[in-house]
Image (spheres, helix red, strand yellow):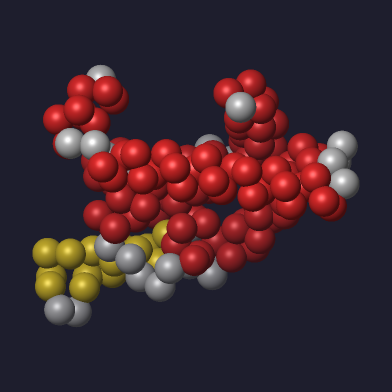
Length: 145
């Protein structure tokens, strides 16, 4: 699984880089495309990154005219994030690249095998999440160090 993930990241990064973005920045754009005005904290949580890391990514995306921050009407201390019109074609292009990568990756499998693989990976993912949720926070923190 590690080798496949590493090769997939390399394949995608090479193509995203030619569009002037990193995979991390694309993940932010995709997250914003799927959500309507999330806060920076919400996006950081969804992407499992530190808020300061997300802030820097959003700064770069904002400088590129792809993302805009808007004050939350209910709380001026909170910023909500939105894609700009300039970002929409780029998100579509990068989504096409991700779909192409997935199709290439799964090309050796027939439809039944793809379904089986998806089912098995879902089981493993859900089990991992359940284990993580049952762990005491200190153990989780120690494990990630």
